[in-house]
Length: 235
Ligand SMILES: NC(=O)c1ccc[n+]([C@@H]2O[C@H](COP(=O)([O-])OP(=O)(O)OC[C@H]3O[C@@H](n4cnc5c(N)ncnc54)[C@H](OP(=O)(O)O)[C@@H]3O)[C@@H](O)[C@H]2O)c1
Image (cartoon, rainbow, N blue to C red):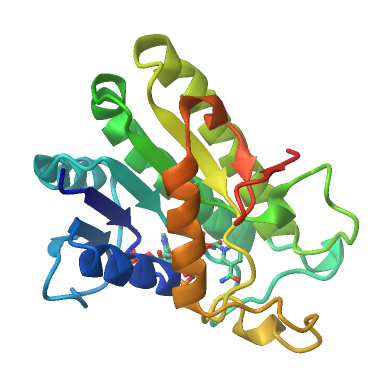
């Protein structure tokens, strides 16, 4: 059966690589992004920059016409032109924290809310939300990056909660958060010096790994935070 993959936050460099690999394997690919269409071969739904709940709902409703069996949510911001991640709580700025919570938690939450009905009714549906290992509270041994870490920890809780709610009506669904591994994209670009050799992956390598994770997912994984090799990470 032809696979159908929906990628939300599709301007993500990892998301674009996933789209390319899925398309090359013959899957139907649908994209939702705030950025203009980049792939003429995919179905494309434009999300306005304000990302209101209504516009998220509208985009999702259009995209669900393609009956996706796999949904990736790639939205995530670590730094932007105005702010780098905090090294100390002394650098914490409440407006910047609110922005990170908005792009890293509230936006995925709006999409997941819009998807609820579909997730409870679609057998074997798989949702992979890109999170980060630095959002693991147990694994945190370095500190720093307050806004990003807090927002990814909250994202992990959002997805865990949703997995429990959906499982009551659709036990065959699988909804996980996923650490993609350090990948050469604008998000990681300022932090790539001094990485251990071999840690930095290209977006194409990461996409291949994440699609391998998708292939081995079962409902038993639902609610977990997974590493790029499908091992379970602690919350
Ligand atoms: N690269 C890494 O090493 C790495 C490591 C760990 C985790 N991750 C996670 O993997 C995911 C993809 O990362 P990437 O490296 O591919 O990043 P990227 O190329 O910088 O892509 C940025 C992503 O964030 C979205 N975005 C940007 N500004 C936003 C805003 N204001 N509100 C909502 N969404 C916004 C974009 O969505 P639009 O298409 O709508 O613009 C796009 O999906 C992120 O969740 C990131 O945290 C990446």
